[in-house]
Structures are given as C-alpha cells and as structure tokens.
Length: 134
Image 1 (cartoon, rainbow, N blue to C red):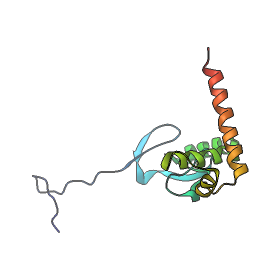
Image 2 (cartoon, rainbow, N blue to C red):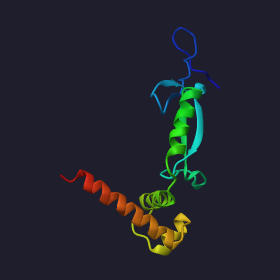
Image 3 (cartoon, helix red, strand yellow):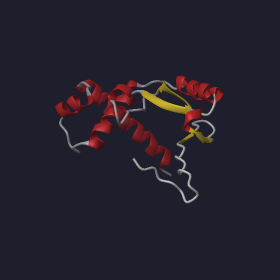
Image 4 (cartoon, rainbow, N blue to C red):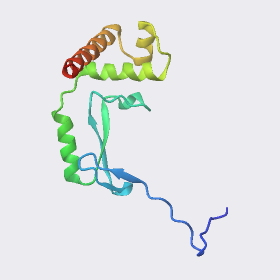
C-alpha cells in the first residue's frame, strides 16, 4: 500500500474530527468530548428505533454535560410527542400517504396512539399559529 507524502517527505496529517458543545458551543477535538443519551420525547432516531426517546448530547466538560443533562431531565417526557416524532419519521422517509394499518405497522404504534399523536401535533400547530398571527 502506498502512503501519500507531501513535498517535504512527511505524510499528510489526518484531519481531526471536531465536536460542538451543546451548552457553550465551544468547538473541540472529538476525542475530548463527553457524550451520552438523555431522555427526550421529541427525539426519533433516524438510524435505529432503539434510540427513539433518547437524544445524544455532547459536552466539552463534566460540568457542561451535567448542566445539559439536568435541563433535559426537567423537561416533561410526553408520550404523544414521541409518537408524533415516529409518525413524522415514517411519513418523511417513505410513501407520503399510508393507511392506519400501514402507519401502525411502520411505527409500531397502535391506532389509539396514532390518533393521540396526531391530536397532540395538531394542537401544537394551532398554538404556534395563534402565537404568530397578528
């Protein structure tokens, strides 16, 4: 295997992956990061349903990680919000129109949960609309 060298005879340095602290927005090397999952009902993982309801947070130090973690722990975990996030994931990554049975199959939710998620979502949209209307 050939190794690429620069003109001065040294190998080019491998780029260092960087991270961003979720609290202070400091940029730092990935190997210095503190990462962990916190409960968050708005989080539906794009890669694995096993992580639905969990948000991966990144911090630059123990103090910032603990602060971010405490902020999420104070936030209420709303099942309907998580269900709405699952529905959104399914509707944005597959066929745009699905029957109730298809939604249930693709989300793992039952019809009453789907209906509650839709009602929760619609209420949030109404509240947002009222805040933005003059």
